[in-house]
Image (tube, rainbow, N blue to C red; front, side, top):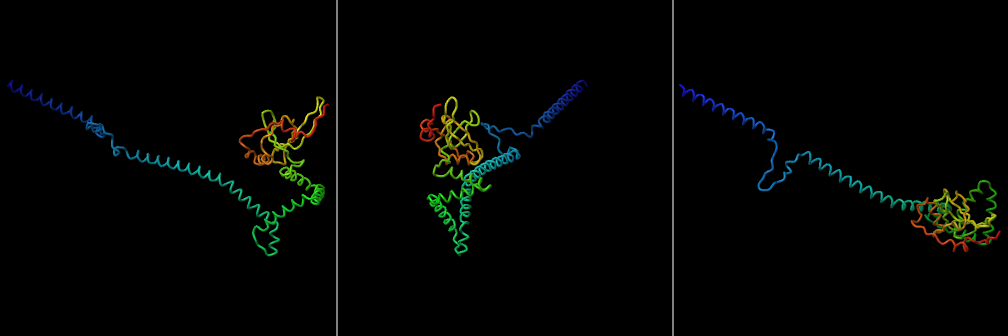
Length: 289
């Protein structure tokens, strides 16, 4: 009886141990379930990188999309720069041709109606006739008879209230840029300190004068400083020693004023004023007071 009881106890104990071992194994397997979806790298002597198939499809599509957007931005920036470069190059050429074409049509319109009445329809014939007429007027006005007729015409125009101002202003501009340097034309370009210290202004020397003072007399230059265009500006009297004369002509100075300073050279070199006062400006002998 005792032996049977011992055998039964030993058998029941072994069965309980087997059941507890199987439960522990089941618990271990349950703990390993979350790691089932992960793939470990294969080790065949050397570590291998994960294959492109293991990467998620969303990451590859976003990478392609960002690459396309970057390419589009680069192409758009390149095209914009080239388009603006083309506009900058073609704009002055187009303006030049347009103004020239308009001028040809404008000048051609003076004599083209005459040729139309005569039955002659040749484009440009009126333009050639107008240019020839202007040339002949210049030749005729250079003679004694033409000068007298011009003086008579100016006398009549200056007696008219409105036309006198228009004619005087336009004549001053035309005389200033004329090849012959008359007494009313711009003498030369000047740079003066105006309107305050540390600021410089471009002007034109128009005449010279003598200023008498108790301490003596000094030679002054009448400098015309345009403020808007050539017909609006300030007249500044500056000592001839305080004027800086750049190495540009009167025509270049007028171009600088008309263009609003866009055609000014990058470097301006001033000439020696002492060597230019006597032949250019110093026309008077300063008397001693």
